[in-house]
Image: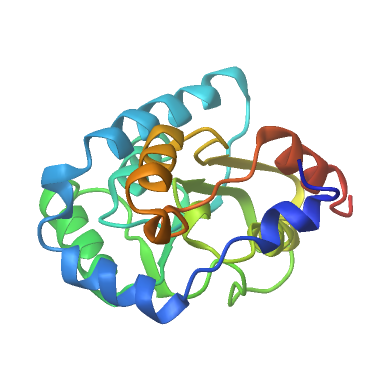
Length: 203
């Protein structure tokens, strides 16, 4: 077990440029293989059933091809939604899908950027969301801090990520068969570490 929250997060070694290139190459075919992402997005949206929030400004971090962005648009039709992703190619897919499937609904804004260094002013959004993007950030604690920074007073953070045991079997198998490859499996922080990081954020 790590001694601190920082120990958990700093074990993640992810190269931003490599992630951007990988997702850009996969942008055209991504939706054909994103069954899990869509399922979790549907469940994430369902959590809003327990809130009375009516956001006017929404940020969707790591929007990918825009599935969760479209769910948000369908729920909050009058909101101004900003979809952010590291990959320009993914943002292009988001624009195309919105224009094709929701042409009559509000226009989204699209922005290329780093989830750990958001290009927005403090308190810019009433709802800040992210569906399965945190595992691609080398400093999840910094991402959480940035999400909190751009959140307006009274706003809501809503995100999903993989738990510590995700891909555990793969990691164990590689450790037995090809030990040199075991470290290539993405590490994930446990729920306790994320909770501790959230508690440390300024109010």
